[in-house]
Image (cartoon, rainbow, N blue to C red; front, top):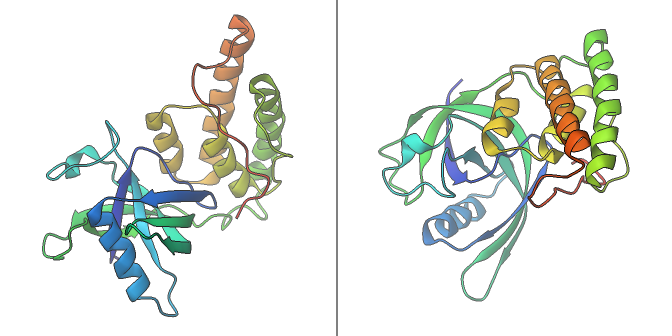
Length: 224
């Protein structure tokens, strides 16, 4: 069922279960946070994070430069600073697909009509032997990858769905490949793609004896 959701286009991909802190300084997104705080009730407050196709932000008229599949970011903490900025902590929850932009929303930020995308995290995996076999293979290959790149963290979760999103977030990948992992229809498909990506990246690292020239992500100690 379609519903309205405010959008926050970013130069990154948010995955279900992962924490996303943001420093909100642009007036339109400060208005978004203020509206969410004002509408606080029993329903969880949140907005949709969608990755932009190029650059770091979607300017006015740049709707077509963002991907159509995103992830709901649920507000966990909101701190209003003296200068009007907000520091917020969000957690990814469920995936969605943008079906249309609400041109009559009357807000300075984008509001879209969205529908659920794919299966809920963990919904199909508890008793799926294939998902658990794939998860075991990904765990082993990801451990090698993490050691090669010296990514921090204490280990990988056993739950196939949780593992698939955590690996997607922790790998050093361009935005387009992260987006492809977000858009995989189910956990098994995502794990299969990650096995191939891990094989490719490990081959490059081990052949060149070098790591990617980029800031390495830190593997979270806990998955929320």
